[in-house]
Image (cartoon, rainbow, N blue to C red):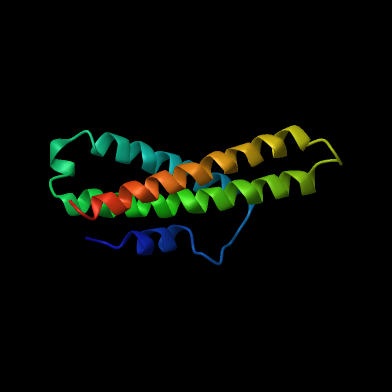
Length: 118
């Protein structure tokens, strides 16, 4: 099995390049990978061991906590690139989204810890 980080680094090196296009494509890839995971986990052969549940929950917890950071950075960028006050509704909505994600990450982390005991 190939390491997921190596696959990501091959297509999206951590140090860039960073651009509008790369940012958009990275978000699209994340959406497509979640779609893949949703489809795969419907198959009985995709999850046959409890360690798979544990590992998947751990990775999803990490992803969700990183998404929380991304949402905050998108709010900062929106405020920076728009005229003063123009993005206030968006930044407010993204702030609320971050708060929801914080709770989600905590719940997901709890599920991950519980899965350790399976």
